[in-house]
Image (tube, one colour):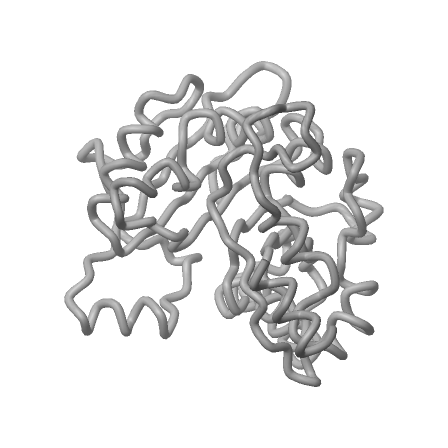
Length: 268
């Protein structure tokens, strides 16, 4: 209820209308109750949008956005060209996203985030850096994967520094869970790569356990656990700050087992 009061008090610039209410409404255990929803890995906070971020959501999201994505997207039509589609989930302020896209112009990047200020920042960066191979979805990654992408549509998935939900009672909210990984595997093309990174070692160990147990994935680490940071993942200010605080970053790189329906993809 505090989110609704906050939005009413501060106006639409504080959060894209309906986003916080949609994701933070009270839960019900009854599937027939309209308040029912599964446990989510995020909480949408009513953070204040700057005038520039609001302008980006108003003017740039129609240009760089995916739309509702309530049916499988025609990715070539969406980007206006063919390209290897890579999905980044939870891009934060978008720094890694635009830097990767600029460094890998042959790829088409789909970027999903639930927090409107972060989406606004990325949209402004895409405009400033003149990056056109990114399309942005403001919403829940699970819904986007289930409804907006055909099975086998992706050549890569990148998830960097998801919320580790440190407290044991909150571990059920962690994004990397068996059901979610199974969904990712289904959306990856044979040979497609799943790249995860975290600076919370207990979460990295949890990720490794979940991915090792997933059907259809193979670990590309020569030691059976982590890999060195791949050249395509930029080191962000957030990561550098964590390292100064003594955090140890772990990168996990898995490949979907190649099948006969599509040529394997060997690089992300």
